[in-house]
Image 1 (tube, rainbow, N blue to C red):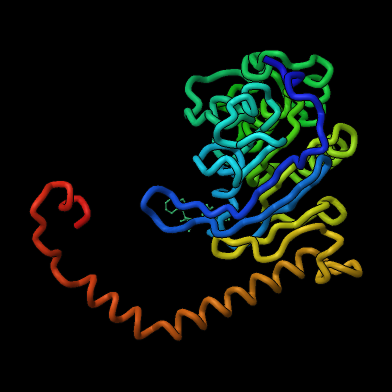
Image 2 (cartoon, rainbow, N blue to C red):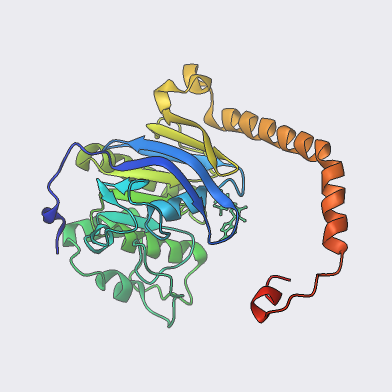
Length: 294
Ligand SMILES: Nc1ncnc2c1ncn2[C@@H]1O[C@H](COP(=O)(O)OP(=O)(O)OP(=O)(O)O)[C@@H](O)[C@H]1O
């Protein structure tokens, strides 16, 4: 099946509506998130460690079940419409090596000492010109083997595999972290071209802001599972007048840290009570099932 089954429309590339998500019986990890990214968007997803960026990207990638109306990618429900992945329309590149590189649904660890050539030429349906362009861009030696390549070299091969098919929506989770500065800037430039020339959309989670000035069209800043600042880049008043991105995000993070510490100090007595309760012996439970929760 090819993406020609889905003719171009004016639909948003990514539409998230009142998304709240919790993992099984666990805590709420994402709360009341709204996001509307038209074709051609480049959205910078940022926030402190544990803010929920990876969780949100994984939900957008269709890895977790949410109501079809909560997350629509190209007008199709992210979890329920498998064709998003099988056509290559939706790509996901995370920090782990995934068997279906660049696509959700993988997750097997890399096994065997495969060469870059085997991996890259193994991606079915890739356009040879696009493949050559990516090999040049990422400066890949096809003779690299994955067990002897460096982290950055392995990452380059992974990125190339993930980009071989011309995605319409690409989700990136900290993928440039092991790359040298030149490789990183070249890649950012390539992504910008893809959005401007093909109308692709990218959501990019990162803590590295070097070279990002002028790159994003949208921002989503997360705190505790919520998007607390977001929308069109031009509409974010703190970033007006050439204010540096790093300095601005640093201020937001500092403010959040102070508020979190103040809340913890205020909740000290409550915490003590919880700790005391936790130290009590677990009650006897009559069934094996309930014993599981002790
Ligand atoms: N399956 C799960 N069950 C319970 N809690 C989880 C689960 N997955 C993630 N979390 C918690 O959700 C929160 C958000 O995690 P997430 O990995 O999305 O953060 P992040 O913003 O990507 O962080 P970082 O910048 O460190 O990569 C964390 O507190 C994490 O411990």
